[in-house]
Image (cartoon, rainbow, N blue to C red):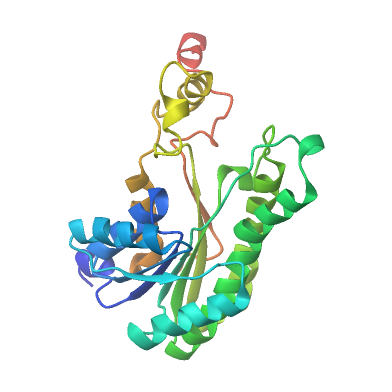
Length: 268
């Protein structure tokens, strides 16, 4: 097989949940440029219309579908619409997610549950819905958007870290049950990525920006395209024997979280 054929996604139907902006849009754009038919989910028709225009600017005719990923009936209806108009899903990217930065003692239980529902229960619902179609077709790809906080905690993100830790193990369990059907289920753990959402903490000498720059061996924030490129590998034939794995795209921060720029060089 030629190298370019390994990464050719021509006519593959891709569903990216929460693919209207940021990392989700970058993933959809990269997979679309590889030839896939991109379907994007969101809760706002207005945001989906804006996203469709942005995809079109990159030569991608994205199909947009409104549904709430935490509502099983809406998920079923939305994916049924995709199946009828585009085809059964070959590649699922469970990207939709939220975070609430609240200390545990101040966090309402309802807020905690909401984060768990969106970041953990929703991938279960959507994955469960598309898997039978993949089994029928003889294979498929599921990519769950995990996090560095799938493996460590941080102040004020207890719900998010709990959900992403759970998503790591849900990924493993999906692999254990569906690998025999030629379905590869993997996760991506983004590091600190330069998006519109992180812009306020990357500018103006914000202390968190200093922390990221000090602790990341690569010495920079990641770009959304870095995650899109990783997704292309996991969505392609090149990863046919990669299963139950979390690919951390973090500039090395998890490899050496204690790294301080300049310190190691001096210490030798």
